[in-house]
Length: 265
Ligand code: SF4
Image: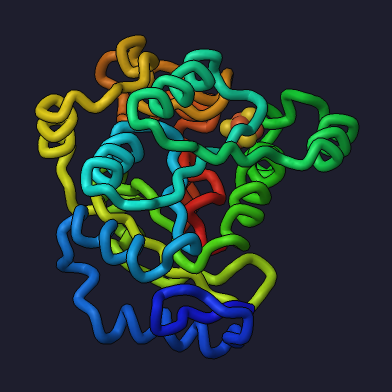
């Protein structure tokens, strides 16, 4: 258990309760919802030091925030999850972003035993079988590695935006507390660009020559794993290309195009 001391460094004596209370205090006492993105990144970096991580799948928002953080001289941790099923273009793009910004990007992977057990039991392509099996695959390859990453952080920066989907409009906040999976520890989740429109984001990217993932040019609106992420066809919804075999399967309170990563953890 750790603690933020007066000099901003954490000691090993803060209880989970005290840490939760401190995070609740930030939400209650600071107007995080109204802080502009750059200011929020600076606040998080200076407040949490190495206990804050920007986890990105290298989409527009993630790389734009890497650009903001590096340009502002912030010493922020960047991370990405390698599900072992990413497109080759994504692996190459990780290297491109690291080279452009001269920053490390932590690559978080699933545990090989977990993947082996899943594949042995359900097959490599279990995600075609049912929504439940797809969620299980996402859990093993994305959510559990994300949980492992978040054990090293009290603040998680993500790139959700309201105009990405109806579901995100209803659920994403600029600052909120989420529960660490299986514990009572809480984590401050920040979405600094949540209120940015697509147009504002694209303007920022063009003006700053932010590197852009090459799969956007091939019609991919987002890029997770091979097979599960496909290009969008003319006239389709933004996220129709994700698990397209589930298109039309919406249950109450559920978004079939959302993996578990952004549900409460
Ligand atoms: S996107 Fe597909 S392959 Fe990737 S973790 Fe989820 S179900 Fe598995």
